[in-house]
Image (tube, rainbow, N blue to C red):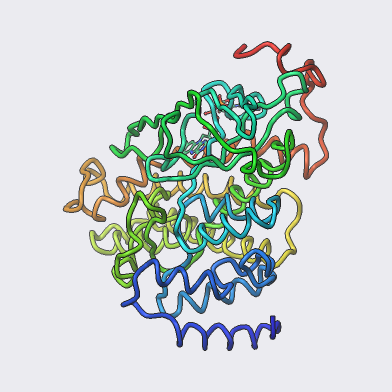
Length: 415
Ligand SMILES: Cc1cc2nc3c(=O)[nH]c(=O)nc-3n(C[C@H](O)[C@H](O)[C@H](O)COP(=O)(O)OP(=O)(O)OC[C@H]3O[C@@H](n4cnc5c(N)ncnc54)[C@H](O)[C@@H]3O)c2cc1C
């Protein structure tokens, strides 16, 4: 890395973007350039396709890409969750293979964590992995697996030692989703879409070489994924323009990248925190509701929360945030989506009942309203975030656990 002052980084990124960004490239060509330059994941170390930048320097990269409406790195959970987990815990061979393929869009990853009996109590998972020579055989069920139908790789946590206590007998694997032992069944949401899925693993196979972070060390590795999830979900997105969905199934790598600018990201919350107040101001101005005091008050509150969220995110990225800040950021995102739901419904009135592109807001507000309960559940529910803040930031005592230290196989299940 030649330069590290904010001014010189800005200059270097600006020059690189001017020389490389073109809306006429294909999505695959642009993401390859971004991955090779280290700007796709600038906070990663140099041996992990990054530049070793601080969060503050990485913000400059995002800003410079956004200024020219250049498309950001690949959307989806591969970039948001698998990449930081692999960069932290993987062998150098795994990094060379998987990180490169995530950052240039070759692979799309889904998160095979939650099970019908293990959500908030994730360490209670029962999906099992049994060794068979150089491979592991996986049997179990995962649920709420977002975008699994579009992904060729999965972040899988499975129980490898049922004799060990709950948190210590779990292993983290990178699993190939395209195999006979895996069946993906979409779950239709009230938005009308089927973003998430049930995933049945019946004799699925994964090589021993695909273990991430060591045998029976999966809980520590999963916590890296969960920390990335909380920080990413609370931050309201990268700020870069639009995106295609990566991987061989969505088949978008050959699309002209300029045509994906302004597109909503697949599997997102319909816009994250940024721009909610501005969108409501536009709609309320269009239909004359902007003069109504209660609506003005709601929009002002939303705008204020947006600003607080923005500065909190910058503080987190700059490394100056206190313990519990990502959890607070995620709680605030839940609050903002609920407030957006109330104000948008007041602004749209009966129009809120009509879905589709021809309706007011192009159907976006209607979809956000239907999706609004989601963020207070995924990535750890609001109640779970509060527990974490209580225990890890405020130092309150943990909930008593009568089964602490007992072998997992002896703990009562689904009680
Ligand atoms: C839109 C969406 C996308 C998702 N995507 C994925 C994905 O890609 N991959 C994946 O693995 N999972 C995914 N999930 C699943 C998500 O992580 C779980 O739904 C979540 O962890 C909650 O688990 P649960 O649904 O089993 O609820 P439960 O754990 O059964 O909780 C039920 C209720 O009890 C409360 N509760 C539970 N334990 C406590 C406690 N100790 N203290 C206080 N209250 C408690 C909860 O807050 C909740 O209100 C997704 C969920 C949603 C909604």
